[in-house]
Length: 519
Ligand code: ADP
Ligand code: MG
Image (cartoon, rainbow, N blue to C red):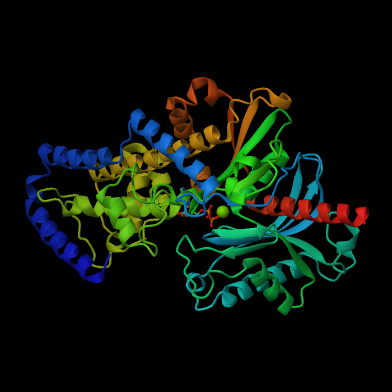
């Protein structure tokens, strides 16, 4: 929101607030509570999706996934990862990994034990917001390389100690590193990828079109680190690989999906159906992992719900007109949707959301992006008497005191609706990927009856009931139904991006060894 608009809203609020103070001696009448409740329920209803809506959305989602197999300019890009093999749990070795998310980077050393388990050491560092909009990508990648240096020096100090533990890297040899990068890249091999566009609030000039693998390699080399960047994967591909590594043998891992700052999914597609690759021989038995980039589903809003809050989010974003699905689903936007809904209640004539309270001019309620989605998780989870915990959280966030129980209920109702819609849309997308991959039809093939989906991201991990709502919605989809849903296993692929990057590095390193032996 612009400063001008915010101050206008603020002025309105201050008027209303003053009048509510005048009336406060008379008490806050039942009619006023009813009106507040009615307004909040009305806003919540704008976010509601029926079972029919879900079916229509899924049909269109499958069509757009299919579109992406044939052309490079579809809404859902379906980017080839060049990974044609998924792990089976027997992989071994120790690899470095860098996972550049939308909020944090993680630098990891992963030891794959070959029995579907691993050990992992990691540093997690918040990406300074100034770097997300730096004036050159080199600045960002040099910062990442420095984080890798700090990590490696901490984990492998030049001491005898580090050699004793064979789980650890020998500091004398060069390290293979897998790089998980969660913005869209066009890959033409597993170890290179040109940035197509930034997402999740990143916007660095001069980066689009550059090979992010090479940028990281150059920054590491500049610090004279003996590290080779051997594989570049999207975080969703990492999640899929990590899930496949740790899955039981009777499970076919079909997808890896991320619900964090952004949302996206990778899944296993039949290579011969990816017609835009123009492969001469149709290889029906070979698969390739595709990075869907599903955040951009339905860019022109043919079927996606579109409230005034969604439109405001889009208008205030760094990429208006893009990533419309992501803007309705992911952690970066849900809190802001709720904030806009709260401001809208404040704006409603005759409704007083915060009777008897002063609204500070500097309240976060008027500040774009100030409401973190984690607050919605608190609201959803709260079972305290009179929602006292939620009230404290809301007062702390907004600086408005006191917030009464009725207002907390109203805000919670809107929050619940926004979270529920996000989970329903997530189910639609997962359902579409399951249908598109045809894995439900391959019942019992290779003894793999269960369909595995690895998921990652703080939203799906911590938002109460998110997976339960996804499952409920999957059952409503005609093409999935109760029978299909009962075969689907959704698991949090813990450390998915880091372990996945290590697995990708392993796949490349073993292919290299095989080539070496062959020659
Ligand atoms: P990244 O996308 O960088 O890998 P995460 O998976 O940690 O990062 O996701 C970060 C997003 O999760 C942020 O948008 C944040 O608002 C949201 N988030 C953080 N905590 C919670 C929570 N408790 N419940 C729901 N969302 C959360
Ligand atoms: Mg992540």
